[in-house]
Amino acid sequence: MTQETGGFAALDLHPSIVAAVIATGYEEPSAIQQQSIPLILAGHDLIGQAQTGTGKTAAFALPVLHKIDVSKREPQALILAPTRELALQVATAFETYAKQMPGVNVVAVYGGAPMGPQIKALRQGAQIIVATPGRLCDHLRRDEKVLATVNHLVLDEADEMLKLGFMDDLEVIFNAMPESRQTVLFSATLPPSIRAIAERHLKEPKHVKIQSKTQTVAAIEQAYMLVHADQKVAAVLRLLEVEEFDALIAFVRTKQATLDLASALEAKGYKAAALNGDIAQNQRERVIDSLKDGRLDIVVATDVAARGLDVPRITHVFNVDMPYDPESYVHRIGRTGRAGREGRALLLVTPRERRMLQVIERVTGQKVSEVRMPAPQAVLDARIKKLTNSLKPLVADAETTHGELFDRLSADIGCNPRALAAALLRKATNGQALDLASVEREQPLVPNGAPRERGERSERSFTGDRPERRAPMPLGEGRARCRTALGARDGIAAKNLLGAILNEGGLARDAIGRIQIRETFSLVELPEDGLDRLLAKLKDTRVAGKQLKLRRYRED
Ligand code: ADP
Ligand code: MG
Image (cartoon, rainbow, N blue to C red; front, side, top):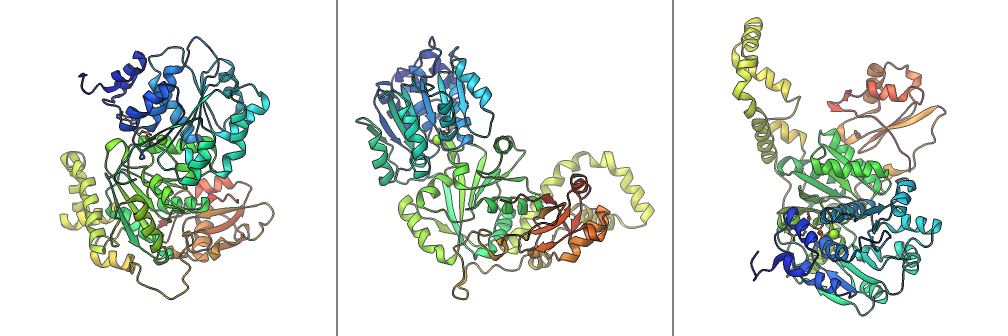
């Protein structure tokens, strides 16, 4: 490391922290790290603001670690984060940076997991607590002294933390800590109203704001597409065909919409899952881990559930529903373009939401360009490209393994090789449309937001408050309600569903209760007794050419 750049070594951090950071692969501190670390080390309160993906975690984690007295086995630092996933992510970051500092213990304290192990970790002398406010308050109710020795407090995603929903818990937490503590806040966005609240809790805070021409990361290419609300699912599916993505996160407004879109995607064969505040903790962790390691490619999330997530392989953000405010937009698209990578963000805009688009452009200082719905030809080209790519690696040795079989089949059938190859292709592609006329038929032209009849209800979430969200009828006794992501949109009628379940499930007609077909999904009442076995039996059932994927329906 040269004298001029200084790098991490020039920051007066403990050498074992610097060593761990360098082992992680960081070469230089980012701007927010460069400017915040000395101020935090010097003991100042601080408000730090920098774009998403610029390393704010290390900006507070490194100096906080430096201040930990390893010889004392008591809580010394508290980091508050708005979600359990983020708390875990931050705790993991601390562990990484503390790898070469034996004796440092970090505990993540969040709801949805048993209290016992968390209490144990606290008792055994964890010095760093990374917590969500709700669960931390539970701990405080058991032991009001838990935070009595904590002298460093960090609020990550500070604007989210200081919103009304957390305020009561925060008051309790603040009051349980020593007056003399150091408090630092970090966020990518900080609206003036929240900043005012923040200042009330800090003592002569220093401000670090990493100015950039735009609030969003330049490496994120932003585009929008005009659609009508009821075309959003179709639009997403078509975009996915042509976009070359690694991992993708799609944002919708409601919890139900995360489930609906995720199952629509699953039905199309994508490795997709929903992420929202109602999903059980261990399942949410599994979703994030799976997205990280490639077992999942698409996560459909609500804003809060995905705040601050750092999954480097996310190449695309789809804003399926409009964010509530420009700040949310900035955070959403900041899930891609992490640490200098490139990313692409797409926003679906209904005709009435055009004004919000202008607000977003003004606040982010960046123009969002319009894209059109991919044409059938583009969809076809993408499909053929995928098919080509999937066959290419097989050509090398398939002749050795299957050549003789091919000869035998064409002799047995008595056809020419091209006819047989074509038959195999048809079978392998499973009814997928692979010529222009079929693609056109399958994908009726979406009119790209052309004005429609007046009074269109376009503000709604694409499933949010449609008529089909009416509360379902009360359930018959001994029955369970099940759900499939196939609906009227997929050409499903009650008789198809009934037929499939009767045939494949081997049920008697009167065992099946009410069937409700909606636009994007359907509900069926089935006998509770033996339901799991029945669902397993129906695992591979297809209706109207599509996988049924019947699941137990969670009422909420
Ligand atoms: P933010 O909180 O600002 O959105 P994170 O703290 O989650 O960003 O960091 C984003 C990514 O950048 C993480 O994967 C992190 O490991 C990486 N990172 C952080 N600091 C550096 C650095 N100095 N050099 C290279 N990568 C870094
Ligand atoms: Mg962060």
